Image 1: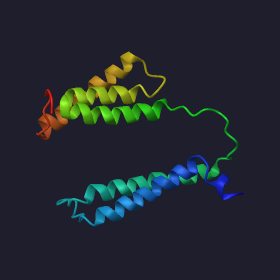
Image 2 (image 1 turned 90 degrees about the vertical axis):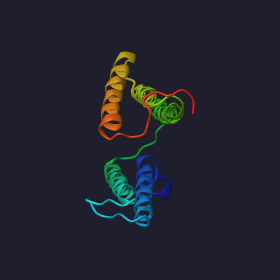
Image 3 (image 1 turned 90 degrees about the horizontal axis):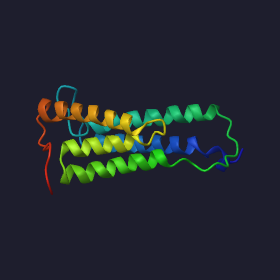
Length: 152
């Protein structure tokens, strides 16, 4: 089996995830992790890097059991584009609109990445997540992120 054939599809993505996770872990250690009771700046990046590495390894192992054959279909880009649009909309609306519109629009865009979701179901999910974000981040944690704002 050639290296090109072995690294096709899920395996290449899994390797990229695992390598990125290891990189995040090593970079996170340079910030100091602290402990669970007194977390340092690198604690969250190290934990997320470990999870990213674990996901990459699980994907790599599960992809090894699949028999890879030639794929001639056009990839479905809807999900990836929806997530990219969700991230971009949160960044823009977070600065120019506030927490409520940024959260609602980004969750709505991400939910529309699934072909099974309807406009109504995506709006319902976005409304529930927006309410949770307001309760948790604005009132629960008192984050300095305005609910609504106009302009930067």
